[in-house]
View 1 (tube, rainbow, N blue to C red):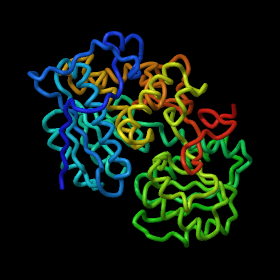
View 2: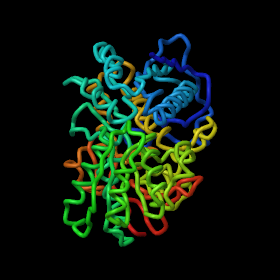
View 3: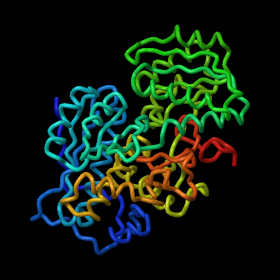
Amino acid sequence: MRMHFRINNRGVAVSAMLTAGALAMSGAAFVPVASASRTSHPAKANKSPYVFHAVLSLTGAASFLGAGEGKSLQMLAKYVNKTGGIKGHPMVVDIVDNQSNPALAVSIATPWVQAKVPFILDGSAVPFDKPVDALAGPNGPVMFDLSPGVHPVPESFIFSTGISTRFDAQAYLNMFKAKGLTRIAAITSTDGSGADGWAQLQSTLSTPAYAGFQLTTHQSFDPSAVDVTTQMAAIKATNPQAIIEWTTGTPFGTVLKAQSELGMSSIPTVTTDGNADYVEMESFNAIRPTTLYFPTAAFYQPANSNLLSPSLKKVVAAFDKSVKAAGGYADDAWALAYAPASMFVDAVRHLGVNATATQVRQYLNSLKNYAGVYGIYNMTNPGHLTSPPSAATINPNRGLGTHDVYMTHWNGSRFVLVPGFRAGGRKS
């Protein structure tokens, strides 16, 4: 089944743009709805649409992310069209459902690549994204992968949204270290997301800064499994002080169920921000651990938080207001696509509707001090940076680093900053 959504100019305001010329110099991104110009005009009806192509998991295993991603793109298109569109052209979002099937995702994206579209929004989780990313050739298109678990090669046509899972691992281990929780166990799914989480944990633990940790056991499971009691019992037998559970969606619920049934709910637990989803977590409240931690981004903090810079406060406030007006929650499901699509809008408004993939890539790589919902982006290759954030703490083709991670916990109704900790898991 293929599901297409053509989005026009009917709908809810998201946020306003600065002029393209000012953007390149100031590094500013979207500004809040309250600051939008009252002289904005809708896109002209007599101009042809400018199409954004997105392949998302609207159904299937990753639909808990894909559904929100689709709605956020609709929000963005509606507002862009109320503020002039793309150089006067109506912005249209063509969203096709990959049904959480990698082969189907490739079949959907291949004609777009052959048609030489300049960019594609590729979601919603590692197993379904990476095969599409592989379609990018020496001349593009730009693939903005909607999974933080993808790690692009510098200067390539592949970009990754959100904060790197490598920095997530550093953040939660920093937090555990500060709390004296150094005997840890891990359980990860065998799919792409789980494999990446396990690889990042191993890599991080191998560095001198984390030499004091003891990994009591690592268990793995097929994400289609309906029971992981055996694996969780093996973890319980090692008496860990904390558990890392790296899998997303339904498989995470399977892990939590076994953890609860085995009486392990009092063990501090961390999971991927892919599970930092309000609807998902509300459904798991009956089986969640007492303390469940997540490495999250700026928009999980209140807009008036003193941890956010003035530019971030404006962006976070606008995003939160817009998502709530659309009946959603300001979480990863809505932000993963919103953030890169915003950059694409800025790029085409600056470059013009005939911009090539190479030009779009160059534009993205030029962004510095760009305020987005995940944090302050510096897309420049780390080797070119001469001031903080340093080369050691930022990703190329992503633009975010350890300083953009905020450790939070789920209190049953919302995500709350871990007391005493700031971005990157550092104690305040």
